Length: 143
Image 1 (cartoon, rainbow, N blue to C red):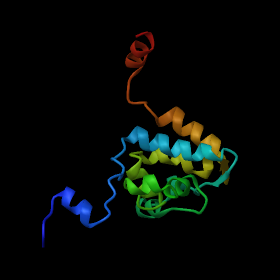
Image 2 (image 1 turned 90 degrees about the horizontal axis):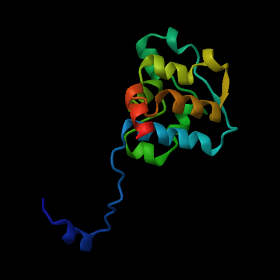
Image 3 (image 1 turned 60 degrees about the horizontal axis):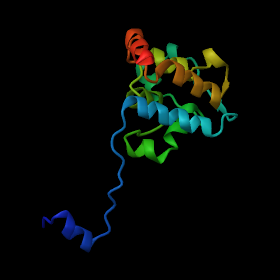
């Protein structure tokens, strides 16, 4: 196997250097929100009874045209590690607990369908930049 410096390789092959950097949890969630807001009136399917499924079955849950499939359809999220549109993969990739993801995608909160806008609002309100406590947010507000 031959080893070459990057400069040498550039003359031998077409090499793209625009591979996206790993995104933080907040940036991944924000990207998901942005994708949902592209078509806010889009009607998305929800997942059925996620909280009653055994862990293995819950991890494999998916359905076409869900909020999870919107995320998986995005080349940037796939390039940064989203492997499929299952419940378990979304839980891992977006670093959400079962309860958090359940609140986003389960039919018991929205019925069998939900608008993309409502899902986006929920994700933004509950999960983006929630790491700072109230004191830190107040300090930032008055700074």
